[in-house]
Length: 335
Ligand SMILES: NC(=O)c1ccc[n+]([C@@H]2O[C@H](COP(=O)([O-])OP(=O)(O)OC[C@H]3O[C@@H](n4cnc5c(N)ncnc54)[C@H](O)[C@@H]3O)[C@@H](O)[C@H]2O)c1
Ligand SMILES: [Zn+2]
Image (cartoon, rainbow, N blue to C red; front, top):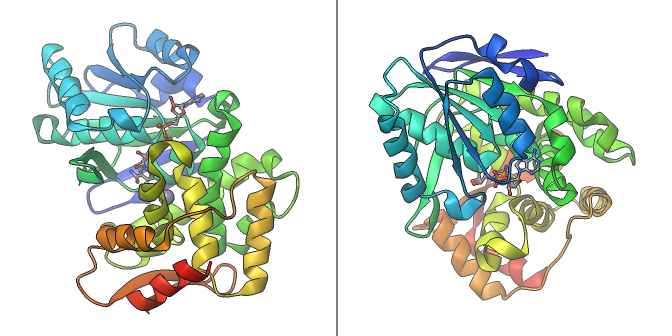
């Protein structure tokens, strides 16, 4: 399957097919010299498969994890690109999850004021969520994704075979974003998760998510309007993520709980709870409501008494509504 994403910055292709990594070079073609960026948690066999296709290319491999997503790693990548005489017509290829894509994409955005960037995502989260849309960033001064750029890729190769080695908790972490997209935009996508065999439908799940994200990003490249709908569950989700720190819960797990917390419709809540439980994701947690509320206000930079949240009362019909901060606070106390 192939999707064309048309943004103001550029038009690019997202290919979704098993086995793409094995023929990446024939799909990518030659765009000057190639520079590969990956991290040490991506199975070595995948890195080797790519390197064999680009024997002359340098590869920068950084230590895996969110802890590496910072300006220091970014600078090291740029220094190494310079040391390898990469020029304006050359190409960066990312092979890894969302961390690698964000790092390599931001390096490509800044190097020589922007060079060609190709993404080969290797996690469910990066295939479903972060590979389309052009957001690139690093964490800075303790604030996640606070420094970055919009820099669209030139090509994205999504190969679901690469998910075979992904630990199941990580797999589900990314799939929660797909559940979110189903609830917000696509009842048929949500229906896949209401059956026990949802893992047999990974390719369709990714395809539906890519299509949704393409439609959203094309309408709203810089998150001025409809793109905000992708943030369903993220108001409480982000606050919980900050509250618990990096180790306790994954992003998707916090988003899952965040969706349950913000939803009003009890039947829908119940259905979502069953879906999350089937995925072995947490559906509730112990927290200090005042502390989470503080983090939420900080995250939203709330300088007024309302925030815009995403609400879903009917599957597939996510919409934006204004909630007073007092209501967000009350909910935290009563969950
Ligand atoms: N740019 C965007 O639009 C966007 C959107 C959502 C999230 N993000 C960012 O994405 C990041 C999270 O992405 P992620 O969940 O992919 O995390 P990640 O990149 O850290 O990968 C998760 C873990 O899986 C390992 N891994 C990667 N591929 C593997 C494979 N095929 N087999 C086995 N292990 C593998 C990694 O080494 C890592 O330990 C966050 O930094 C987040 O801010 C960006
Ligand atoms: Zn998310």
